[in-house]
Amino acid sequence: MISQTAEYALRAIVYLADQSEPRTNAQIAEATQVPLGYLAKVMQTLSRAQLVNAQRGKHGGFTLAIPAKELNVLEVVNVVDPVRRFHECPIGTHGMNLCPLHRSLDDAAQAIEHAFGDTTIADLINVPKHRKPLCRFPDVVKK
Picture 1 (cartoon, rainbow, N blue to C red):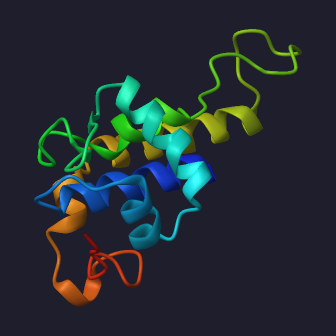
Picture 2 (picture 1 turned 180 degrees about the vertical axis):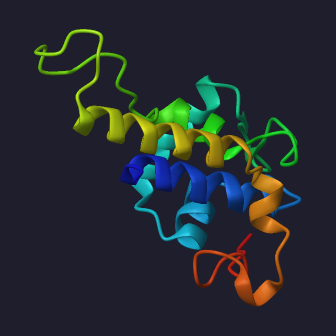
């Protein structure tokens, strides 16, 4: 449904939304179970898109740049790997009219966009502690 990169970006964003202090790449990687090298690239992309703030130095790290209640899942996904929509038949045989297969795929992508657009990051963290995503997260916090 979504790419691994999009999932990793969402893990990082959800984790940061649940933290009060900046978190380093290493802390985020450990808590979200994302490979550190991969996470560094994802965080750079999120920073360039101004979804996270990056602060250098001894007490540096990443924080959310947008409040969790104002940031939706679709915005995060679209930064790293947008939901693929079909506006015309990709094999060119139907022109602007989508064949039944591609119409169905586009309808599914549209439903995903709506669901992701209606779900904020705050919605994902405002659940009972035992239902928090990512197994160990957010209990793993190292300074």
